[in-house]
Amino acid sequence: MNENILGLVAGGITSVAMLPQLIKVLKEKDVQDLSLLMILFLITGLSLWVWYGFIKDELPIILSNAFAVLVNICLLICYFKFRK
Image 1 (cartoon, rainbow, N blue to C red):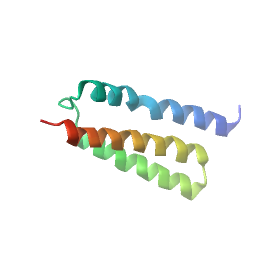
Image 2 (image 1 turned 45 degrees about the vertical axis):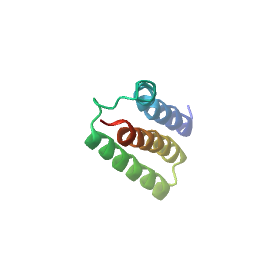
Image 3 (image 1 turned 90 degrees about the horizontal axis):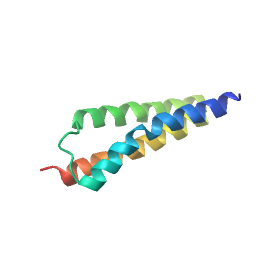
Image 4 (image 1 turned 90 degrees about the vertical axis):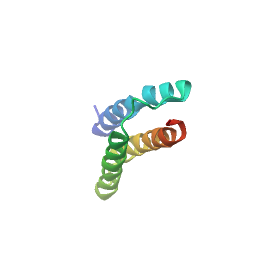
């Protein structure tokens, strides 16, 4: 298997890991059980992976982690919008 395809598949699977949480938050409009610190650490770490991907010119790393950053930024926005 081509290593870029493997990287895209692996990155895609891990990138969508937070989508069920985002969908749940959007449906229920409840963020009480979310950790702000976890979201901030995830965004920071994923952003560093994107930067690393650019340095190494590795498209699978860039794409999968950029998507994960977007999902987590949406979760962060929801956190502030729906918190009580």
